[in-house]
Length: 421
Ligand SMILES: Cc1cc2nc3c(=O)[nH]c(=O)nc-3n(C[C@H](O)[C@H](O)[C@H](O)COP(=O)(O)OP(=O)(O)OC[C@H]3O[C@@H](n4cnc5c(N)ncnc54)[C@H](O)[C@@H]3O)c2cc1C
Image (cartoon, rainbow, N blue to C red; front, side, top):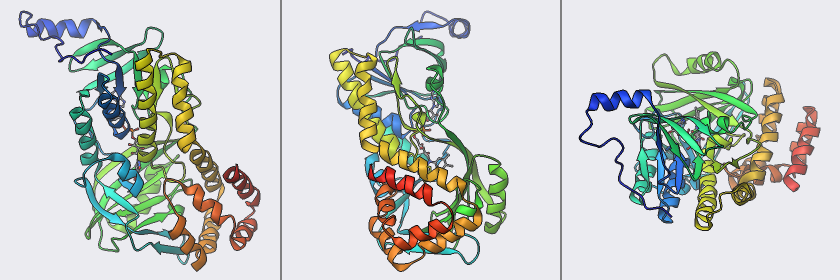
């Protein structure tokens, strides 16, 4: 394994700065590989992979296009207990915890459940992501901020970078692509995009309702849902995802929260795993691979899990000096065994949701609003493993008959088969 070196690009004191600047703008400097692993993107996926690789003694470089890690925040910040545990951070980024949810259909169609104990954390990604990066840096990972990967040459195994060091071409041995939903690397490897690409919009509003439950509004979006996540006794995050006309749907949903909105932002949620997640020395992880959960859009848990599998694969490949596709295929086996089935099931549930109109959603809410079922949701509901609850729900005759009345029995059967396989 190569040793990590201090960064000395362009530090020669005998070269004038204007000359150097001119040089950087006009030619590509080709940098020979000095790192065992290069990681694209300093989100939760990239920083987890960086920490694990650095901890194992690999020289590790993270390349991040933004100057400040964690910004802009493009996340509602709702993490299940297990997702938060996966981050391995202090509680500094936590606003508070929530205990359950209220599901709101049209007026008169709603139900809520309260587990009585914390079921999820509401966090500030603007603090969470930097803390994860700091931990990786403490383990020896180097970060190159304000540096954008503009292109990849998989034949030569080089990356084209532009940023504070001008334009450079950097060779890599192993590359972990954790560069988010619009991954330049996946595109450069000619890997088809995820099946669904949703737009998310979010803002902070004044709020003085219940702090313990999040609200989900499936009818506010034609093909996903809207949310309200309390941040404190006076503020909440509201947001909505949809594939089409998200700003218009969001504006209609936000009306009920009054006119004052701050920190409005938009983001992308890729749903449906890409058809390939490794190749040409690269492992594609997190949002870049299309790993967010299709039922909720949450991607921090699966992102970090995929980073762990990518790191294990990268460490083994670096140790035996084998970065062939056959060696990197281990990565795909590992993530599939971990959460592949959940994502497959989630995609089926998403296509079911996309086929429902508002009155069918209201009828589904009414069917779920039964003490037995609410008790089951509290006992077995798990944001990261929804198949456990779905399997149990499918044993409830009342629910099956309600879904049958909605004309979606065959879809439920297909989901049932998927759960059993
Ligand atoms: C509106 C919205 C709400 C969400 N709410 C939740 C939620 O409540 N819970 C949850 O679990 N998930 C949520 N998500 C999804 C979650 O934000 C992502 O799944 C998660 O951030 C994925 O982490 P990542 O590290 O894979 O990618 P990212 O967090 O996207 O990080 C990728 C990093 O790569 C950098 N990068 C990108 N391209 C380049 C390049 N060319 N060169 C250099 N750097 C580059 C980016 O700047 C970024 O820092 C939400 C998403 C949206 C849009």
